[in-house]
Image (tube, rainbow, N blue to C red; front, side, top):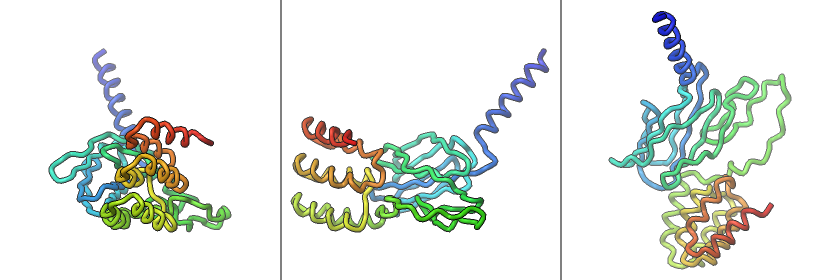
Length: 234
């Protein structure tokens, strides 16, 4: 009887171990929008950077612990879920973790990804005809370095009209993420102008599924409701 119980326990631990440690690896990439120097752990692996982008390759644990530290402060410690042969692209927004993308690492048995959140396009082996390039709004996303330079200049503007001109100038050639948009819109003095620009930025935001988080920055319920009604439109 004891031998049977021992074998059952051993099989249980073996199953759990297999579920947590895959033979096929994944990747976890993280973007932190707020400027600063951070240290990021994924289980025992560590990456430090002041550029706001962190890359973890060869992730075998299907449920690793992600820890984000700024100075001596733990900003976030959270278990995440990864899928073998996929790259999980995350963004940190005010201590909330947002999933931006999940990308297949391989296409036609070739490594198919660029250095952060897109496909290279050079994944065709000749066996399967390559698909024509598809428009991808993410390709215009400002890098953390470029956004930090923009935001530094942007914060020096004293009037909403000046901020609008800067946003319009950047928006002609680049798109913002929802977390970047939230930082931008928080600086507006009046909800009326904030709502107008929020609607404008939504047209090209790279992660529209996360744009609802903008609602919390409106000071008056009327403008918050108007914003949410706008998002509900098809």
